[in-house]
Amino acid sequence: MDQAVVITLTVNGAQVTRSVLPRQHLVDFLRDELGLTGSHIGCEHGVCGCCTVLIDGAAVRSCLTLAVQAEGRAVTTVESLAAPNGALNALQQAFQNNHALQCGFCTPGILMSFTDFLERNPDPSEAEVVEVLSGHLCRCTGYAGIVSAVLEAASRRNKAS
Amino acid sequence: MKAPSFAYAKPRSLTQALELLERPGAKILAGGQSLIPALNMRLSAPELLVDITGLEGLSKIEVRNGSVRIGALCTHTRVERSAEVREHLPLVAEAVAHIAHPAIRNRGTLGGSLALADPNAELPACALALDATLIVAGRKGERRVQAAGFFKALFETDLKPDEILVGIEFPKATKSVFLELARRQGDYAIVGLAGVSRGAEKRIALFGLAATPVLLKPKSLEEAKKALPTPNGDLYNSPATKRHLAGVLLERAWTRLS
Image 1 (tube, helix red, strand yellow):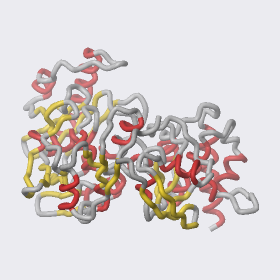
Image 2 (tube, rainbow over the protein chains, first blue to last red; image 1 turned 180 degrees about the horizontal axis):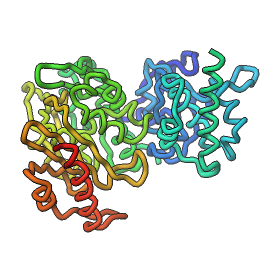
Image 3 (cartoon, helix red, strand yellow; image 1 turned 90 degrees about the vertical axis):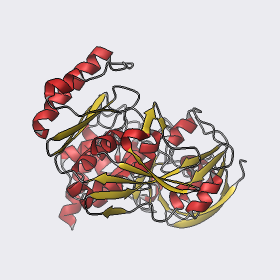
Image 4 (cartoon, rainbow over the protein chains, first blue to last red; image 1 turned 120 degrees about the vertical axis):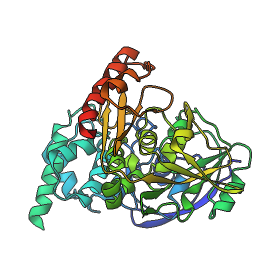
């Protein structure tokens, strides 16, 4: 048992092939094997939402996904959001504008959940935003700033298009 | 915590999957949204995980004459967004929105939830209220089990260790109600109710009260309240509180089912 498995997947647009142990979580693979430490590890049982990444565009908990399960899939992490020169994307900028983070530990997961959400719901209500946010724990902001930030990102995107 | 060590196999066919399940310590991995937390907390230590998500044909939603057959590997999100489910099984569509959070629903599966049989989970109660039939595959072929005979005890079902739940047939029901009381959106229910009305018959499944969902087929609200079992308490709610809350849900449901 416990034999390593070779997996090939796409991470932020680049193809990677690595040998992994079946027990390794996707979040540990991203952080330890690929050095992508933006995805944070909080509770390790799916409650806090810090480790949320996208698999084929859908938000998932990377602590409740094994690296081997990402074989052949496209994984997107928070590192993909800003431009290579460091310029923030619209959602990130809205978080800055609305003081939607303090310590920032939970922020990567929240950004990824709403990256998926806004793609499917370009004009969300406040209640819908709150419902998605209920899947994330933030111990500093009190959440109001995060809700404002998501709504601002949605309305700016709608005005631009 | 991190999961203990185990081997991993991803079969391409049902036959291959059933063969792998005969190995000692083998366990099925589908969406993993309950199994992986259990591994992380070292509540489970399988020797081999058989990842069935590569099996074809188990993610379909098919509308038939009087029923809707949903493949066991359909994620909660797929069920939630299905126009067919919304039209013919509004109970299931409403219930799925109460399961955890979007990122969990994107991976968790219908079959996984039923096979786990958590006493506080939404879908086993829906299966019971709708009188669903579970389709189970084994080495000797398929067999069909009524929901009423499937949920045996706490986290215990009629599934044998070498069998795979492949699909669920839900008889259509357009008059239904789903209610759940939880401390926070996405939490497991303190008490929940899945109710279906077909002609003169009402089938009401309550969950969060006992080791399995409790099915009532009452003729009146008073009869339903009398038939409530003495519930198990939990960390936050006494048996008396739960019984009271179940009565409140029955009252709310009754007018909508009548």
